[in-house]
Length: 350
Image 1 (cartoon, rainbow, N blue to C red):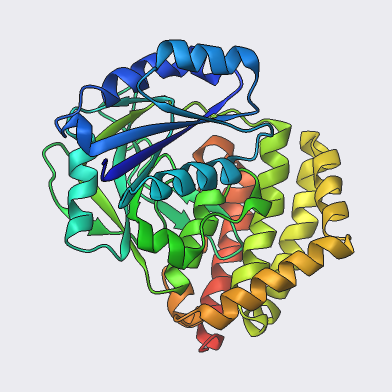
Image 2: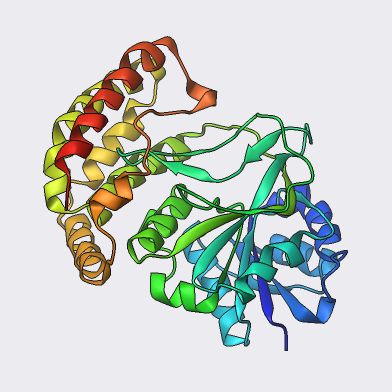
């Protein structure tokens, strides 16, 4: 029986582009092959995608689903791995090239401390001297962004470092007990900020995240700002704040939330994605949306063990998106948000 379940999500013809390198890396690990099982969740599955996966990775267990909900796909794969007896679950993107010792290095720490989440060091596939992610940061207004992106890698590191933010969903591992405590991914997030949601819930339960510096993976990351991405990132940052902050914290942050909302509307009109912004607004005007939000809030607030004061102490006051940085954000938006955050942290003591 495999001790480790490795979960990969496919989406339509994604496998045609990325499966080969990912498969070859997984089948060439230093860890014994009988110690881990590979599960591919075929999201938005079709006869063609199923046939391709079965023909090109017969060693994997294929789990088809009809819609494209990424959070639900991760839940399906994790549920199946745990049902099959796996003690440890690893989530990894398909668009990666994998170091030979990646899986063993990533999962070994779990045997010493199973009440944690562990992330690999993500390097750029296109420039293997450059970092893609050494962890992700929370911004106090619900954004999440990568740490260390496009900086030089420090070769030969072996340390396990505690993350101030959350583990990237590109390559992370945890014991099945963590998944049970966190209650998996919230499927209302659908896609984008799903790792932020998972990491914030874990932080509220006192579950820390760590970077395993000698677990190396090469990410074929290319920024692609689709309208679907814009919608879910904007919608989901609001969901995260509404789910996880105490009401008192939301009241303190409300003035800056309102200022940013006005600014985002202007930016969406100028940038041509105001329709997506309107769809987000419509989503939050539905009674069914608020029923779900209040139900999730209730469960989170009942089970949480960590105060907002402790949580936001590690949050960022500036938005650091290298791909969309502009003079207005750099010289007006970020200074304003940062000053407000410093003042808010002095008030929030609960």
